[in-house]
Image (tube, rainbow, N blue to C red; front, side, top):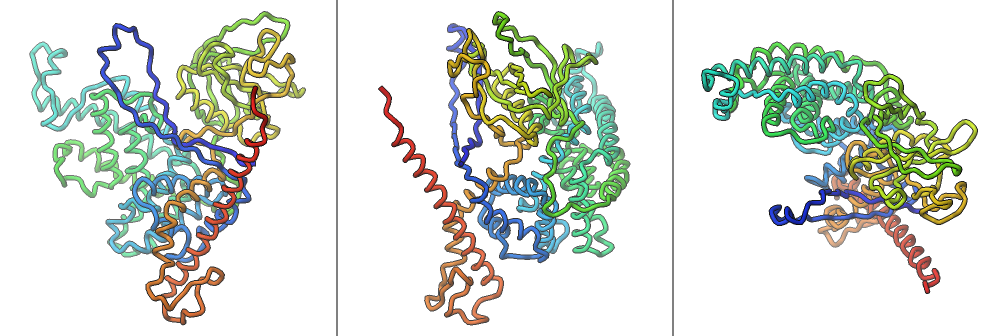
Length: 591
């Protein structure tokens, strides 16, 4: 049976204001787009996913005829980033993220002649590695950077090295002698910056053992491929720059610059803190560049930081050597990577909690404030974050995580966590979040953590048992079967989305649909009317050997195969829509 998934939905919330204040707010124009996709059963995507997997395992360095190569030619800009995200998730779900990234890396280095431009473009290889780091490395990133980023937010120190941006007047409130000199502000800022940078660099270079094994293996392969392509002594630093270009320039530095986008903070920084983060991010980026661009460009005012940055470069080289000094190989076709590590806290915060009540008790709509922590093993809670006495719910006992109708408790943003005890009895905890965004984030995290659990419920009640009946379906038995189907995932459109290979395959299919005409024009429309191309072999009877370059023949063959798969998926979607129409027509009309 097909399932549906809504994608790229963003909700903007506001608060109710008194009528007298409404006129002073101005106007806000929003453009909202809702995309709904029907995701078919897995068997319909099997030919497409098998073909993609085969290309990732292809030993050829520069295979211009693989479906991945054709997909890259058919996409650009934001579409390429979306495609990279879907492909990484698809290959992660098959345990083939390593071979997939290695295949793209081999293609990239084979096409690069100047090592200074390696991975500098927004190629499919660059975008895929970037999305891969977000998907597998976010808990690692949080563990390394969150303490110092939080400290910057909390201390709100004024730091500035650029004379054009210094606000000398703001120092009057801390000095009885009036505004301080530019030199004094620079020296104070330098001390503050190095005071933050020191612990940041220490945390990074000391994090080898905490970096996910999958990331370390991917970086090891990356370094090997780059070294094979540029073995000359003068290119000794290229392998370091390739790895640090991703880890520092596309992971650590952007997270410091915009912590909210990496879930390091709940809110964006104020202007002063944002400027401090920018200076720190610039410094980390310079360290990741191994100091190659120090003293160049227009930002010569960064010179006071250069001694500290130069001292950090040797430590970074040693860190990268230790990072890729790892044994083992990712097994092709092996089990998918566990998205929620057992011991890592993936989400925490205050929620309002209420347990279901037995039929003998009077109904009381009281929610108690508790601090929740979710890891891959447990969902625990206590009155405060510091309290050691905690109540614990094993994640392995979760059977459903669903929204609750607002009318059940006359409260918004409530979800339910249904668990099963050793005796087989089901229990429900109701949790209220402060807004819809937090609700979706908790739903996603809980469903992702409990995804491997067996015996998940197929249906549950979106209401509450109140007044001797369910508010949703009005059934009078508390043990009555659920009236609404359960869900396996919440699509947030970011790294925290659960893996759903069928949904990812559907999006790849959609991307191919967008490029279907281009695929047909570029590879199948022959300028010579005397030649044809047949679907079974890819080469028609009128094509003589040598008439076309071998790569073009193989590209045409692959284009034919992809177009045939698109037709099969088109047909499957049409049959599903027809069944929906038939079912709707057969339903009896209301009174």
